[in-house]
Length: 559
Image (tube, rainbow, N blue to C red; front, side, top):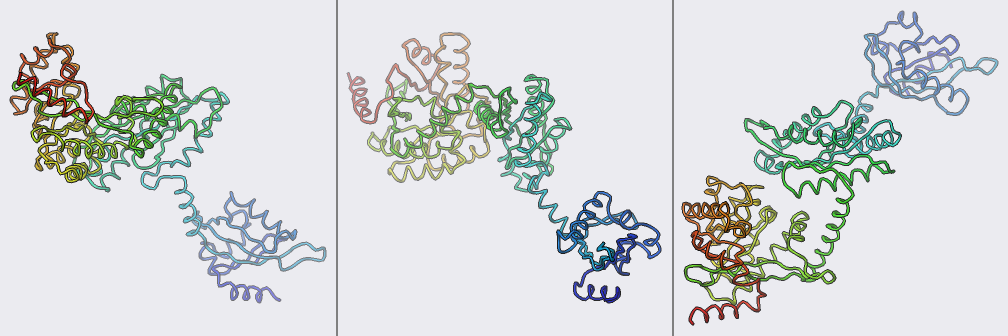
């Protein structure tokens, strides 16, 4: 077959964009006219230079040559290679070159090859995009968890070889959900991109900033001078992210919790290092907003204990191992019981009675407080139906419950027990108000409209102000026991006096918690408190003893 016939056959068979015919002996090449125009060359320009040296991209020439060698040696039935070609104007694009040797000389040496070329730039770009997205976050363009792990692996190896010290910081935003709920997903996405930019500015050019998903980020830091430098960077990140952010004309503020883990002397994997940072982060988040903790072995032990406690708590919920006890609240003027506060107790089959101070925080961290809280509401309402109609029951509610349809839980508990709404009192701490104030105030106003009473619990342990409290529909303020314990001291007495005055201005009654001595009772009465609660009157009682206690109080009053 003559060259012109072979070229025509290729064109008809393949329907491709370009056809080439190469003399392997002198490396001269013929290129179809249309493809030559696509490349931006003239026939004279091609004939005046070695096409392999000028048209094929410099980084791809060796690979193209090896593909031809494999074909000539019979290792491949056709000559095939994906590579870049350089156009006459200096730009380049990707092509797929296919061909075969069609002529040998008398010694068996390949002297001529023909083939085709097609533009595969769009496919290569799509593949590159897929490959990029496999390692990067689409929203922020930061490395994702997979790429973070790869870079952390390399950082660990370098640190182990003594070439560099390294650490990983796990970061979880505070307040992002409130911004997302207020400004919508578009506003939330803009916030995340701003956070990404601020994090990149806060660390060195050789460090890695990754987005793990949602409002979680991670930093890989190298070339560190020691733990003190990790601490300084973490504090700097907290300050940088704490600066106000403008989104759609609205100023918003967020915080961040950070847990750090340094590459230790012993062998450790990237996954283990990330787990350590997460443990430190969890510890930081339990202590409030804008907090930072660096991993230490004791944290791992506490984390393991919390994990075991969580597992046991789930079993306890299924088995019904939790129960309520009730501590009376006494009206100082009438010396009568006005209500009982329901307090949760857990008797562990092996550990015995576990303090609420231990299991409630874990229940809040894990979300188990939602199920526990709903059960407590239902159980307290059910048991209160056996009491006289004038006696209310008070139930503590957590911030987490406000995020999981507290209204429905309250309505379900009241309807299930047949208890009047005005006999239920919900107690909310200052910390619950501060974490998500807009959601909490809206929910409390709706519950108050149903007739449910609302009390501010443990007052004095948070940051509530007079103007802040005006927004909430509280009926009572309960002064924290720490002030009652020291009420004989002038400073504590002054605080109690101030709270009583605050209650009078806001139209709220005042309850003194933790009254344990007759002296404390006299002092809270003299300061103007309306009600008292504490061991001086009664320890928390099981439901079966409430009626007997009420009969005893009535008998004492009548005597």
